[in-house]
Length: 241
Image 1 (cartoon, rainbow, N blue to C red):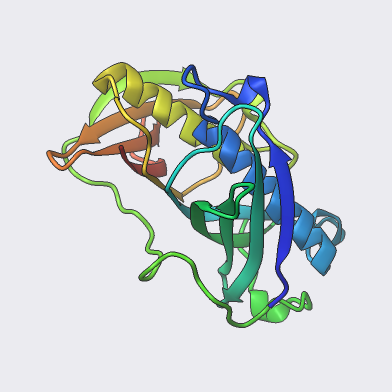
Image 2: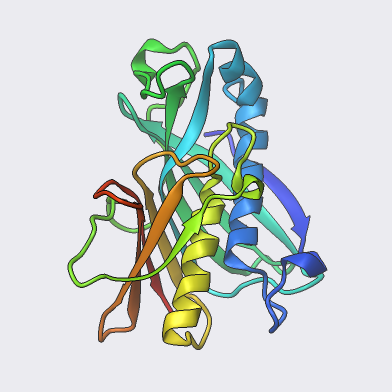
């Protein structure tokens, strides 16, 4: 198992009003750590670009002990932890300067073909992906399924600023949209304890989306993002505070 460690410092523009890093900003750091490690191991953006392909995040869960604050330095350790025919997994652990755990996360990724946007068979690619590795999230990381009882709260048209290097909406944008909508609808209080996000379909600039929300008595909140005018779901998220 090849582990990479990167150290980051929380910037002013990445903070909430209480000084904690925003969840979407924290996810951007994890995305950066994963990209740097994949490049180092020979299956990053450059190598996949040669294969007319790219990585996409399929499923992600982060469990938070404590969020780093403005000007805090924190370390992110990450490693690839196995793969099946279509899914490659990667783990993350974040620690503060005293080596105390801040968060841990598990993730699932696919490689898509740029021509048809279809997933590629990882068994047929010469990328030296590890077959197995230790996981940090207890239990199997399952994909979320939409629940009953959602209420539509708003619509949005995807702006250019949400588009990333691969030409589609970046995975962190869905989380940002969802948390913003939940705060407006439910007046969320307290720190986020976990976020589980499942990605169902790519979204591009100019697409029109509906945001639907739901909550449970146990304090869990749910977000469903759906294309306007149809039943095509693109993103599902669960959050607990």
